[in-house]
Length: 280
Length: 190
Image 1 (cartoon, each protein chain N blue to C red):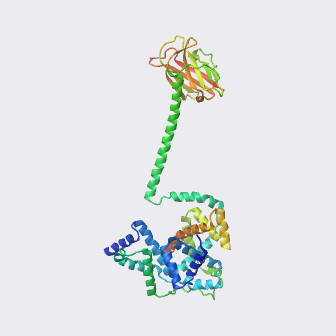
Image 2 (cartoon, rainbow over the protein chains, first blue to last red; image 1 turned 180 degrees about the vertical axis):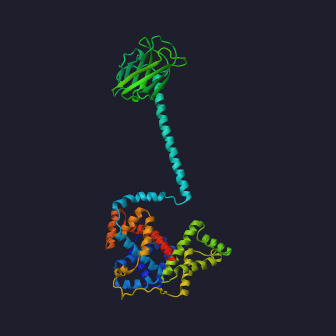
Image 3 (cartoon, rainbow over the protein chains, first blue to last red; image 1 turned 90 degrees about the vertical axis):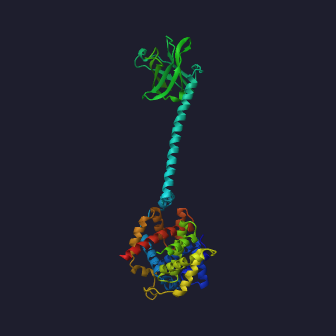
């Protein structure tokens, strides 16, 4: 902290006004106290500025010439101070806003500057840790999303699941195979904000036993969901394959269900593609 | 450099600090302080006197270090004071110092002094520091008189306490001055 009394004493020291004992006190302090030394050097710069600005009093100016400027090193400091003043006067500087707003950025960059090999290594290790952590988090997030959907599909379609009754929270539709559908007309399943499950019923007239797999794809051919080990169920005394999906996986648009019978050489009865449209 | 000198120098650094890197920094700091002290006493060869002081301490460090209590820097100062008495009081520079009879105002003197070498070095050295530090230091030295009020306003605009700005600018100046002094030394050798 700037102390006026201390500053005055240092100024007097530089101008050669102090007694021998006072001078020794200043010198002992500056050689052993880093902060005090910094203060002495700062006051010296300000003394040079005041001299160049012509604001020293006549007695101070005389002492400055007689005592301070008596050594080559001080003369060089004066010349550098003069050159800096001239340079500053002749240079236009960016706005203060730039200086103020950049200062924390520059400070951050300064901290991160690679001053030695150890710093470089530490920084490289830190970057590696951050990249690995980010990658782990991304994989975990995607896996957990996928796991969550699979758990939901198992709950809705697994051996212990029930065929839900269509209603406000269950939007249902019956999908005939593409081959028997009138061309150009998709089955439309309408969902609302209350819909929680989209249920698709695929009639299986012959009721051939077996296990089925259903793959749901969107209009771009991207797989949205997959359900395996589907068994034929009796719904309203009709053999059906019933597929129940969480409504949140659907956006309005066209979808296709590819149904395949498992452990069957070629598609059995009921295998095939079934298209439908989700509307809101 | 003899083996004995090397051993003594190692002992000197160990005396300053067990950590060799910290000891090196303390050594440089003490040397810099001694140069300034001799120079403020008017000595023309301040660097040589500082190095002679360090040599004398180094030659005695093996017997001194085991029993010395206190800050080693103060021992260096004690030796420097003795040297000061040997050299005599304020040396006169070989270059004539302008008398007040000829120069009414320091601003007049400024215009007649050739600052081209320093200016060139300053230009080079300013290009090497961070842009924000460069702009800050130039803004600081552009301030109109009275400088105290102008700089207080500048500090306020930058969101800093005036003394913090003062210290920050001084620290930038330390590096800048060192760079310019080295540059001038190279120019003078050519």
